[in-house]
Length: 227
Ligand code: NI
Ligand code: MN
Image (cartoon, rainbow, N blue to C red; front, side, top):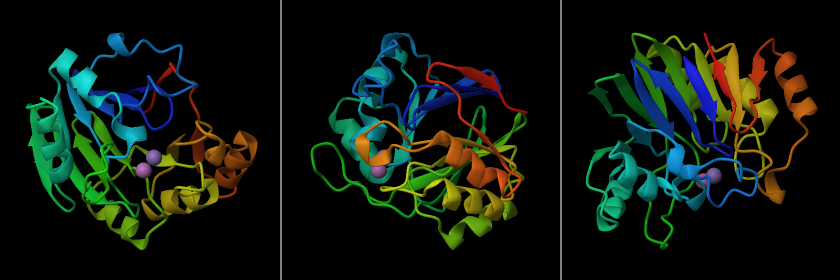
């Protein structure tokens, strides 16, 4: 599966000829100035929760591409007020089928509000299953025992997890999360963007190495092929 990193927790995965874009936050990311927001393709936009650093560019990209947005009920209602109507509302525990495969919304231990301060509902993670492969995006979350359920729903090819600490798991907790979800390849996100979440990449890789799990840290703008 082709994985492209756009900085912070924004990335896309290509499956079944469709581009799934996650948590668009580019134009306000000081590390992503090399990314042209206008050029980012999307057939689907999945939003884990309503915090600005996960949704800031969602309205612009959804409007330009016509992509279907997948988000929780509260984000769905908020997007509707911004004029984005092609939205599939979901909530934690639910799954739905799309033309690329299936999305299951899972627990993320975090908080949520929308950019205007309105209630954001529950933050979520996503388990995506398709003929091309299976992956898990944890969203913003603490390490939580709920993650132990994920292998009963999918045998993962890779996982995308926050490693920046302070607001989410650090790399050591993410490595424990990878063990819980039984996944040997993890892409680390949600680090270095702001002062609060600056990390040592070397220490992060070491934390994963101890558990014999590979931590992938693609550059912003880089596309990697994860098998
Ligand atoms: Ni957040
Ligand atoms: Mn965040």
